[in-house]
Length: 190
Image 1 (cartoon, rainbow, N blue to C red):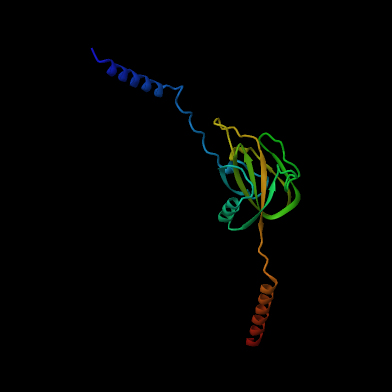
Image 2: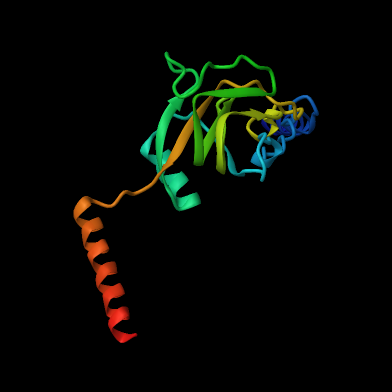
């Protein structure tokens, strides 16, 4: 007869092997990561995007640095739709999976719309000459989804606009003088 200690060790090992093989304790299969392009915006050409990332948006230096590194532009954070005054938006839309985001003033040029859902976010880069009063977004599958692949509802949106460097008056004057000098030199050669 086996000693009691050996019997208990074999029994414990058998129970652990059975439990770890049990489908009840097996880990749920991971959901496919969200791809930002699964959410579209109502603008042509379709915007470039990056994401989905974990966390919210608040205009931090890290967010601005990521946008600059991605699109080689400087950006200014204008605010969020869930701010007390709705930031640069008319309201914070209460939508299930898709909807419209209206700006409180029209925007053109280069801007980034950040969409946040279930503690995740994606960024959408828009470059337009049109004056946009807002954007419509499709399903938030590109931001956050359940393990079954269903999108979560929008929590809020954030808006960033590209800032254009304006030369200082002294630099602009020097540039103008240089151009005048170049033109005069060409005239003398002709």
